[in-house]
Amino acid sequence: MSSTYGTNLKLTLFGESHGAGIGCVLDGFPAGFRPDFEAISSFMARRAPGSTPGSTARREADTPEIVSGIFDGRTTGSPITALIRNADHHSSDYADLAAIPRPGHADYALAVKTGGANDIRGGGHSSGRLTAGLCFAGGLAMQFLETRGVRISSRIVAIGGREVKGETDATGLDAAARETIEAARRDGDSVGGIVECTVEGLPAGFGDPMFDGVENRFAAIVFGIPAVKGVEFGSGFAGAALRGSQNNDPFYFDEAGEVRTRTNNHGGALGGITSGMPIVFRAAIKPTPSIAKPQQSVNLRTGEPCELVVKGRHDACIVPRARPVIEAAAAVAALDLLHAPATQTCFRQD
Ligand SMILES: Cc1cc2nc3c(=O)[nH]c(=O)nc-3n(C[C@H](O)[C@H](O)[C@H](O)COP(=O)(O)O)c2cc1C
View 1 (cartoon, helix red, strand yellow):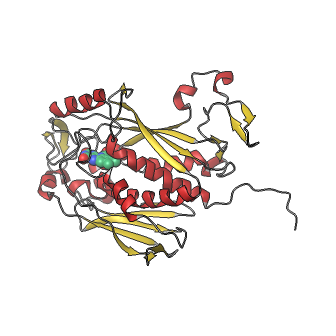
View 2: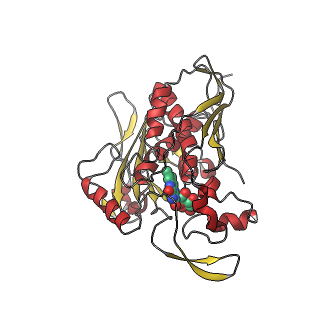
View 3: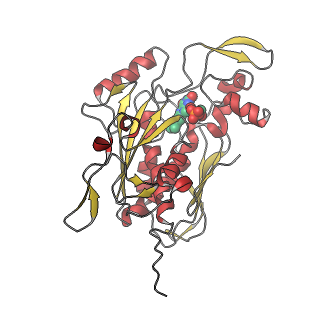
């Protein structure tokens, strides 16, 4: 099993939800960069439990301890390791799950894969908590990208099948979305949603055709976020219903003489390569699998069907907390891409 992403900038996430700690190792980050750690903490706070309505009651300080790669406030160019110690966990809530897997969670598949050697407590290595390390790495990458004119933003497009179109709060929810989440929570249930992320300022010419394209690289890291079940770029699935004349993005020269497109149905990638237009993608996040309602499962020890009531503290909707994680993932993918050679020409003057 591997929890490493990237080619030029390599990110490894480590730890288990109820172990000693979680964190990340970021290898290949440029030397001499002075991170704003307060800004990284504020960014990580957007993902932390308790930051949004309907969010889990688990409390964690989530303060990253820098173990390596930063000296005198500057990156050294060697691997950056951030450790976030675990504190507020109730492992007894998970005692039954070794025998009775939660529908929709990773318990069953991981038990099969590891022969039962996985750490079941709090979802172990598959817990959403692991995304704190991703947010540290992404927060750092985002700051570096800003110095290169690359900006990342996101918005919540839908919650529980309803479009978010009213005035939104800091977490990206409007009043109707908050009510949808609250109604699910009251029912002992959960809802999912869709987040749209935009990466502006990436120059044209980065990425490769076929298997190492822009979409491939972004999708690989975004699908690494637990509960993401769909990723689409530009007009995505809706584009399949359009005609070519509607879906093609006409080219033009802007005031600076740069080639741009009038629309961005291609989502910033053509043939796996950046076009210079913003990369726009949407991620579908499923409803939180751990719900309070009784569910049908099986007892792997006795071989009997059974009813499961999941204990522990779980978000009725993880979408607002997943939103900064998606931005973080986009930042790591964008920086990995920027480190790669861009336009290659066959007309070299030696
Ligand atoms: C920020 C975040 C928090 C999450 N919190 C929970 C949670 O409290 N309870 C839960 O059952 N799943 C939670 N998840 C989702 C599960 O970890 C995920 O659904 C599970 O590992 C199965 O993976 P899959 O949905 O990608 O197939 C969370 C995910 C994220 C990104």
